[in-house]
Length: 114
Image 1 (tube, rainbow, N blue to C red):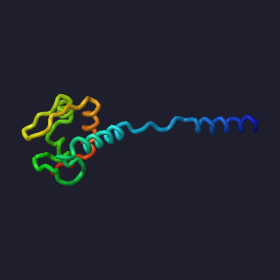
Image 2: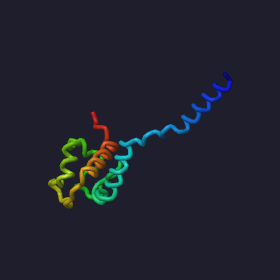
Image 3: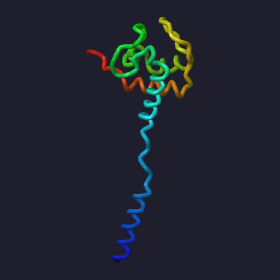
Image 4: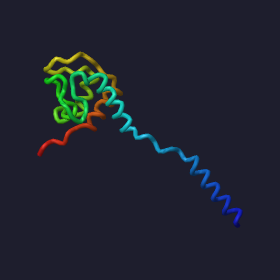
């Protein structure tokens, strides 16, 4: 009986050691990719973080973009090459990059004033 109990304890201990690691938070990873894209591709004109002014006055801060655009519409425009009233370089994102950038935008949005 004691031998069987010891076997069960050892088996449970080994099973716990072999348990898969917790999955990486895919949303956080996607947003981190989006942050990297924003810093590399957009930060010359836009404030891409949670504070600060945009280097180019006509360029909106990233923390207010989703109050101006619906996320799904913005994602489509990024893929198709966004066209806006102010001067902006021509670009197109692949769907994965656009998804990552929008995921990042969601993490830095200001709460609208009441």
